[in-house]
Image (cartoon, rainbow, N blue to C red):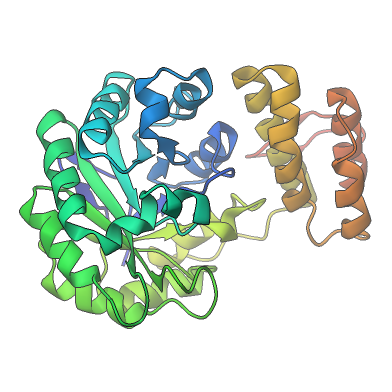
Length: 336
């Protein structure tokens, strides 16, 4: 079952992608996802206006660690021409793939006419696809939801449009905007979309385990899968899914030393990428996911969010995983 995906001229080493998640898929998250085997990582969605206006934080969002290649930049907005200008900037800054967001159901995004709101205005979405495709030399992809509500399912229509406009792949999260993250993703719709699409369709939504990944590929014929929330604090899921897709023995669950090492490596990358206070603020939420399942995890999470000192946070991390010093390798565990 193990296979690769061809997205335009880019041949990915497997068919596993780290999904974009706002406020989560920062540079450290993407580094670890790639290290654990994800063939493609996607940035948090970046506002097209912020990109063309040169906002420092937005431009920082659409860059990546030099070892993480290829990578995709996801952008969002409501204006086709501004989206095209932003996409061209993303390509100039090193993006291997540009991904357009027509999937985000967050109220603030929808109110601006962006994200999943575009599923209510397919004429504008079509113009956007056309304008962005014209300015890019790198592959262009699109992420969508199934439709606005149960009475307006447009996934197949949008997939056809994307293929006609020369896009290179489509990611489908088969929930409606009105569902948010409730209910179940409709994998039957993925199968229907695959059947009519002339570009690769990537499945997203409710893929929380290696078994889920195998099941969705077998049942829908999709070209690949996106792993999102299941990877929060658990980059090891990527190597587990790859093993399942390739029919190999499942790797052992990550030891405490690996979990600790991953959390601290994530912190180091954030400190390298951001000024100290921002790095700590961004990383602390990840630490609360790394420590899930540990004794008194709820109390621990509350404590983490009161801490700002980097060395105190390092010491706390080592203590909760019961290590005395930070000499680690993700390949070899701890040597204390």
